[in-house]
Amino acid sequence: MNSGLRAAIYARYSTNKQDEISIEAQVRACREYAAGHGHVVVKVYSDEAISGKGSKTTSRKQYQALIKDCANHMYDIVLVHKYDRIARNVGEHVNLELKLAEGGASLIAVAQDFGQSKEAKIMKTMMWALSEYYIDNLSEEVTKGHKEIAFQGLHNGGVAPFGYDIVDQKYIINQAEAVYVRKMFRCAINREGFVELVREMDDNGIIGKRGKPMKYTQIYEILRNEKYAGVYAYSPKEEKDRSLRRTKPNAIRLENAIPPIVDKATFDEVQRIMDERKQTGKKSDYLCRGLVYCGNCGAKMYGSKTQRKGHEYLIYYCSGKCGMGIVRMEDIDRSVKQYLHSILSDKNQKLINEALQNYAKGEKDRIEKYNADVRQQIEEKQTQIDNYMRALGSSVLPTDIIADIGNKITVLKNSIKELSEAPLPKDYTIAQVSDWLQSLKISVDERKTVELLVSRIEATKTEINVFSTLNSVLGETGCGGGT
Image (cartoon, rainbow, N blue to C red):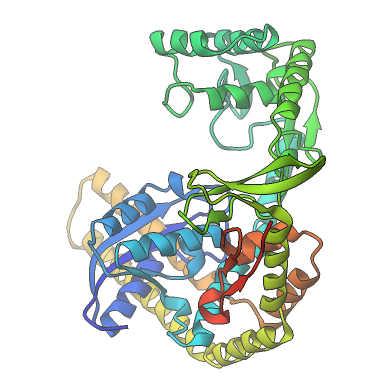
């Protein structure tokens, strides 16, 4: 990496992890890295109180500003404290790298700066995947508190559903909004469209809880939400299977815990109608769905069924209609499985473990640097407290100013306490990485393995090329396939 580059800093704090480093500390670490490498910081972007697991990057305003400025070539590198501060799954990281590359920029995690060697690139990608793999285990303490609230049938955070207000954590019907909720269910029962209803809400200035006009997607979510029939449901952990997220089979469920807006019979009938429609237009969960692109024109390819000589085949076809023809799904699936087998080979796992061992050698230096950073922050905050104390003792001040200074001192003391008690940041161990790789190798959930390790598949009638999230270091494949 050349020195003297223009650097942007991105920091995020989600508030749901006890060992999470503050935005202030993240920015400080990035500035120190930039100064040490001769880079010039041109802008700092930060998103506060946004959960890494529950939120999408589209909800992070500063993240979106970062991407926009990258497209305008405002910086050469993006500095983050750790990779999980900017994205929490492999797909987000792959998309981010592509967007940064288009703007001529690259990403560096200053606390995980592995360098530019082949092993370093492996480590970088492993951090991406591991952040996603272990994220479900990071919020158990928060979940305990939410479960206690759920057993009482109280609001568990977030925006209230349209049609309700929250008063003292209890659901109260918003009568003005409830009128339109009932109309939504009535339209569904009568199998009518929602065009007129959406227009009526727009004309009457009816907006959703987030301040935006109601659209078809919001109406769909309302019709599927059993809260409107008086049922309280809270899932301690989000279901991985998308088909279970709305039904919430493992949820804490309390009947008649919420004042209903529609009766149970109406709600059940709407579910039956919507399930009928879902079955007629169901999207198949193909192994490589969403990852296949035409090797001829680059357009996305979609899975479908076709009949030929009395036999039914699963195929992929080009949405760009470039004339390339179809590719048999079994050929693409076979090529992907062969590639994954090569990625997870003993040889490659050994290479990754060697990279981990080399990285682990620097753990002592990283811990010392972390402790030095904490000490510096504590010293600076103590200096601020001392200055405030001198100001209080130097002259007679108005009561409101004394109270304000007192509040600031309290905040600083609490911050010092948090810094003093914060546990050391821990990276994934060699054993964890090895277990993770082995679990992928023997996993029965092939779709999840594909999502983690395959970034793109390019197919024609004669050739199938699979690109992995690890392809920059473990190679690419071009497996011939035909129909």
